[in-house]
Image (cartoon, rainbow, N blue to C red; front, side):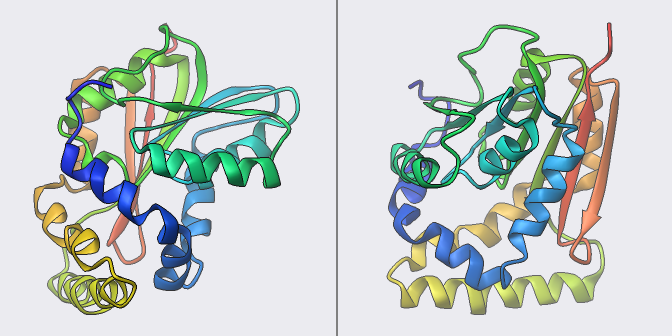
Length: 236
């Protein structure tokens, strides 16, 4: 591991690993699985493909990618949290032994892969936590095959003041309160401040185009409190 990812964020995700899936289900009423499936579909993953899920956590998107690529495909899940990967491996033995998912502890700013080898890539709730967003997108660009796509799901600040107020209330009063009840208050309190630093959809598109993607579109979802950035590498 290199020191290019935040040690503080890594510690947070290691600590919340045991309750991560349950809390996501409770706080989103299970809707996070629908949002993740949207990202997988926008990645263009299809049977026989080799696909990559970055900041894979406990494996949700990697499992959905496995369903899309089928027995003839292959999926790689990368995360910097060893605790999250341990849970992902346990879940994969129960859920998706075929095709085998390759779980790799690694840095999304320095991916351990050669150029032009993936048919699709996904990331959920990870781009907001990297220390260098352009570098992360450059790495995605590098490892994608020409003409292929990546879909990146994350929270961001909405434009509407009413929606911003609701988002602040939800994160400060519901998410942090539930985290506190489960003994993880500080681990979830970081989310709201992280949104102040994270680019909105239009800015994400601009960054993606600057690093070299031929096409970039940001699709707002959940009343613009989240979105999916879909980027396409040039086919040359």
